[in-house]
Image 1 (cartoon, rainbow, N blue to C red):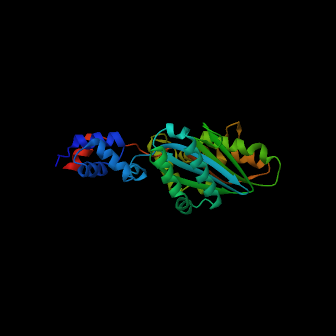
Image 2 (tube, rainbow, N blue to C red):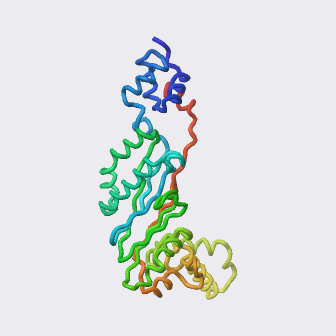
Image 3 (spheres, one colour):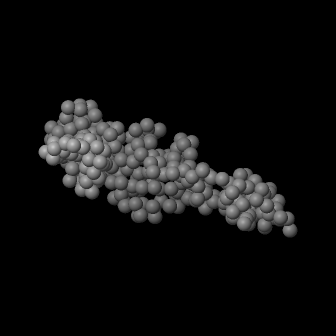
Length: 289
């Protein structure tokens, strides 16, 4: 029986992209023959989706879809930027988004409905993929915007915003508000949505910065109030200066058009995903140890 070394496992993994345990088993079954082991992996169907499930998927596409009073933004990840240009992956993204819309933005139901399609695309393209997240908004009018669109409706930043009202003027500003969101990335829609704890933290940071040191209480109070208003202007959509007319807030622009914001959501592709730096030799050695 040939010795199954770390070098052999590493060589087979690089050749097939299969998992290390699968490579070790294949080499054991074929007495250390690299070519035979690669064939064994293909015969067993192992060099497919399951072998790629552990690889970090931080690229891919964000897409937006809408129908009637509902809009969804969907992020589907893959491992590399290159796969985002693949028509099969783009079709998968479109199909997943369509299903998300059909299922009213329910993540679990959507994932259950599309998991086989995702697995099939993984097998075809050869990269790990996953449906990361879905957000939805509802309202009288739904507007969308995609930044850095690779193809229509799919790109790196996707925004949906809902506005209630029956004025014709709402359509004139709806997409502009979506573009504003992409540029300014608000955390909250209204002041009432802000976590009071976040406001208290902001106050504490400002006071401890020394900016109010030695000032009379009345002056400190006024300074703190100004800092909190600035925080709202940075973090709250309604309070942000409108990107196309900073003399007005978003709330004022929407109200002037006869509308009222009822919801928004945006995704930045891969935001928050950390790509680990793999050391393949150490990983193999640990498995054999």
